[in-house]
Length: 171
Image 1 (cartoon, rainbow, N blue to C red):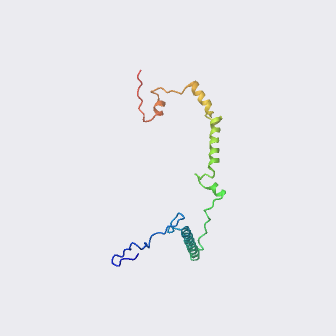
Image 2: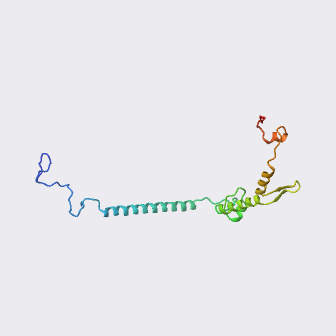
Image 3: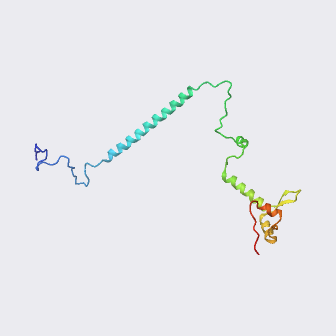
């Protein structure tokens, strides 16, 4: 097949040049080969490594440049301690509120201390005979005796709920 010079079209006897060749093994020969994909990935890794090394070198150079060009420390200035590391002594002298060192153990000890206070007797004020009783005992006493009730006109009832208007109960 030859080409028609006027139309540049192949004549019927000539095969097309850009047609894929079909192999009888089940795949086309013009597909992307796995070798080219592996070369691309290797190149990508290589470029990433080169960029990493350039950035690492640049930061190292800038760090050394900055250290070398620091102005000399004034003899009047005292060097400051490194505050980025905390010792146990520093933690004890740090003002309240402090950060938790171990949340679970600190919370557990706090809860155990509160539970112990709720379950034991203790003097709050010996001079006024004020004691702390276990919460279970206090609930039993309230069930037996009831809550204290103040008459409506008494000053204790008026100070117990400031800002609230007490309405008389209908009988």
